[in-house]
Image 1 (spheres, helix red, strand yellow):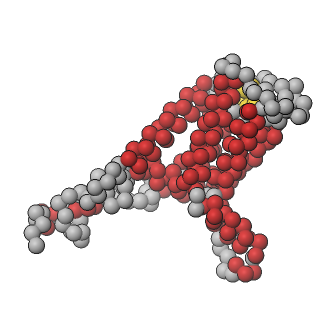
Image 2 (tube, rainbow, N blue to C red; image 1 turned 180 degrees about the horizontal axis):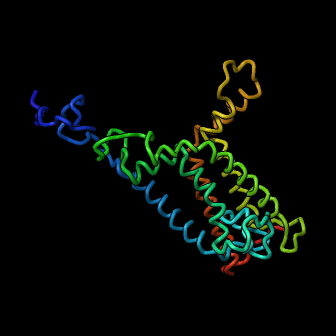
Image 3 (tube, rainbow, N blue to C red; image 1 turned 30 degrees about the horizontal axis):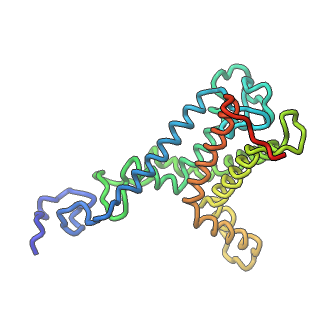
Length: 275
């Protein structure tokens, strides 16, 4: 059967035109709008990157009693807001003149950047590697994550440990959001609910991580001898099935929580109180 491609002319070719592949003239046979998913993914991630970069370098409008932006917590610099109501350890002294957010965002950012789902998302959305299922990537060869710099993706598990610590601090911030501006308990505003939804989604995304699933139930030969770990492994596995959804929901929620604090701090509106 004539294919329109001379196999001899494909010597040395790779990818979809490799000699071991069927000699099909077209790059792919998909007729649907396969490009919508990677395009939407790239747009969504780009919006968050631009917004979070602006907020991280702003070094302002990140606190409004009793709320502190999740981008700036825990605050580890001496130049934090003087009325900061959450953890403020000033580990970095006065020599750190940049935004305090730059000290802490590296941990949740590193966790998401090396996350299995986000790797798939930005590999497809920005690098077209591959752009979609059954669509050949434009690169001449594929080396996977076995070389620098992508081999650094293997540090994902260590970023998971730091992400758990940051989630713990944000949980504390959420508890403090149920105080009023005088630090008296019994307050609940719309911001309290925003923070509550955000921390639930952050914990759900963090615990649905593939590394968490392996830490909980990995390296076991007999689940029957470890019923507690087996039960936890099952729960994490159910969360893991929705890892992609939780990744996006938590990404949106943390951005909304920061935006809410920013709008309060700039006087755009007052925090509606329920009691």
